[in-house]
Image 1 (tube, one colour):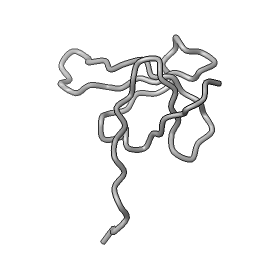
Image 2 (image 1 turned 45 degrees about the horizontal axis):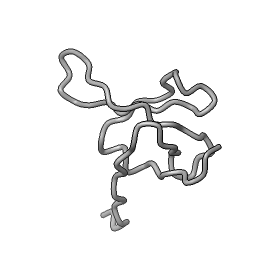
Image 3 (image 1 turned 180 degrees about the vertical axis):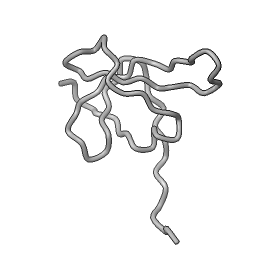
Image 4 (image 1 turned 135 degrees about the vertical axis):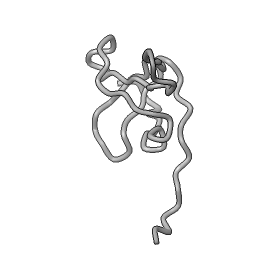
Length: 73
């Protein structure tokens, strides 16, 4: 049985800076997107080096694996 505490999912802000916990990639939040036929919202992140190009998309439960980056790159 897994007894590790569950992390609270972040509530990202468009244009805010984040990273996967324990990973060096600096990301900027692009917003949520819905695809036709899929009721879920996909949260899109871009690398700060290419802020207009989506680098990864995650579902809401995966936001618990992100942390806010306080300082701008």
